[in-house]
Image 1 (cartoon, rainbow, N blue to C red):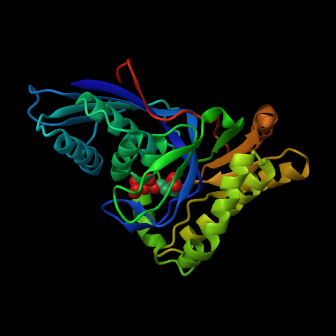
Image 2: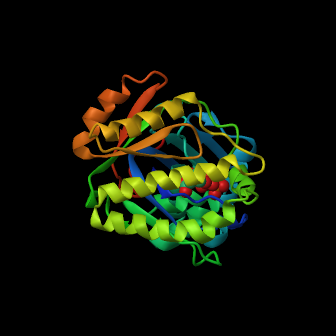
Length: 327
Ligand code: DP6
């Protein structure tokens, strides 16, 4: 009645922003991402008749409030699937550097979905696991399959899941992450998804901008065309943040150092170092380069004031069961 799973975080090239259904977390648009090596969550779930209530511990701290109820809600669903009422103890930790400001619900809910279903011997398919993880956090469904991943929007729970487009070793591109702010963001993604619908540019993004951009990035990934991939990914990041800034309420995730890094990346390109950025719902900058350029990029970023830490994350495989137990 106990299992441990490890799941990677992921960064999207086409972001999921805005939903068709909040409860089921059905996204308004298809998204594309890659799993990130070294940034993962390890979760142990143990169901036991000895427990009087569910317990959730994350990074050695007892989870309370919304954080706890979101975990219990997913466990409730798993219990329902297995036809049991046994209480569970959930222990989880992130392998991210402490306070990296990257702690992601994606790796957390992917690891939780896999560990909890394995603990009750449900033996779900990858598709079913992805659907389940999605209910905890939308982007978590993309942390179940390996490597480069696509998540299609759909009208029903059964039809909205992620699958692998290419394994992690398909392409040696690397995400070099410039951390410029390591505090937890004050506006959650959930609030952002709702606020986005009120941006005057939102429908343009969904109906006119994303369909072409999606194909462009998907094809570039298949062909390992770094220039097309990078330019399209960077363009999408700007479009995404334009929605964020013009949503209601307006959200500004960037800080001054974010802007400095964006300029530095474009400057590097003029000097012959091919690097492209994307930015999640936060101030930290994800910079993609081909593997042979990682060292040069890290050395350059090291000179930029305002960067607190630099992480290097190659593509990773998806969620898997492991023997080690989350401490
Ligand atoms: C900006 O998956 O965190 O990272 O479903 O409310 O948990 P919830 O949202 P979440 O949204 C993440 C959005 C994003 C872009 C992306 O990963 O696609």
